[in-house]
Image 1 (cartoon, rainbow, N blue to C red):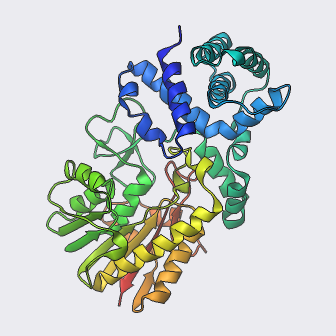
Image 2 (cartoon, rainbow, N blue to C red):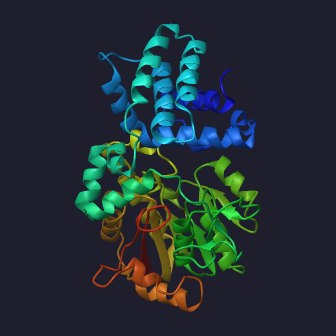
Image 3 (cartoon, rainbow, N blue to C red):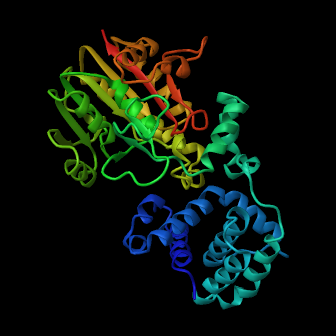
Amino acid sequence: MIAPARKAAFELLLELKRKPESHSDVLLRSKRVEALSPVDKNLTTALVMGVLRWQLVLEQRIRESLTRRSHLADAVQVALELGSVQLLLMDRIPAHAAINESVELIRQSGNEYAVGLVNAVLRKLAQTPKLNSDAAANAHPSWMVDRWVAAFGREIADAICRYDQQPPPQTIRSDAAELEPGDFVVRARRLVGGEAGHARIQDEGSQLIAELAGRGSNILDCCAAPGGKTAILAERNPTASITACDISPARLKAMQRTVQGIHYRVLDATKLPWEREFDLVLCDAPCSGTGTLARNPEIRHRLTLQDFQRHHDRQVSLLGSAMRGLREGGRLIYSTCSLEPEENETVVAEALKRETGFTLQPWPPQIHTLEDEGTLHPGTANRLFPAGTPDHFLRTFPGQYEGDGFFAACLTRQ
């Protein structure tokens, strides 16, 4: 017998390995996972996300335990990673269960020849030290860590790496005072335990960006799906005309079921049809997502340096198109959930060169206004912008607060 959670985790990890376009969050919401008991569902998630977060370290430990170097079939590699994550990270799982069921998974997958290898490697790994936060940097591609060290310093880079290796907190949009408060946004609450119920789960960094957008009478959200920020714009601006655009009809249709009273348009945001029409524009651009590695760990295994330039080129087009839709005196928020300068500061700089008549606004005065009205916690501006920090580009760093990494800039048309 193989525990349902281990069998499901094995199948999902194998699919992720064989289909690089797959996403863990989609697979973990699939029918085969939803059919599991709550306990098995939680274990499946822990196993899959544990392997994805620690895969580079697990692969190294496995290589060191092999008597000779050889190419391993996908199923064999997955069984070894699944077994090793239980042995090296999960204290409550007996070693014999992790080893025996990994061996059985290989037997049932039709790879009988590898039964002895999997058994021997996992027994050897069971005698090695457990993994801890000291190995967090090694669980990221070295080129990625080197970039963060160069851009932000060793302390912040280490904090990001450690944060990425833990399950991120569930943060909801709620007024419920009994939940743990967030770092910045007054209505953000972190779940200390239990379920979110009917409240909307949304990372606090995402909520912060939407709150910073503020108020307007004619609003454009030009990359709107999945809709969390659009919902906050609607909540903050109940009498405004709000237009939500996205290139994906399916994602936009899903939004319509949850956010009503919005004008929806299926559009490529690099080719928006409007000129100087909106007094508030949110351009939350698609990006590499390096600020979300705690909840999307497979990103680190797929990204290359060339991807940043590809994202940059499209982001410049997106921002330029959004800028052209902004009327005189209007505000535009450009944001990403990326940590990379190519997707953030350099995008803004290039767009400002191409589009004349715009000014980059400092954040602290805007944040102080939101503090005064009770939208953000007192001291948010000082936390985000310590004395002497440049104040035109906002960043949240995973590990320095409990949430995803976001970037934001505010532009106004003169």
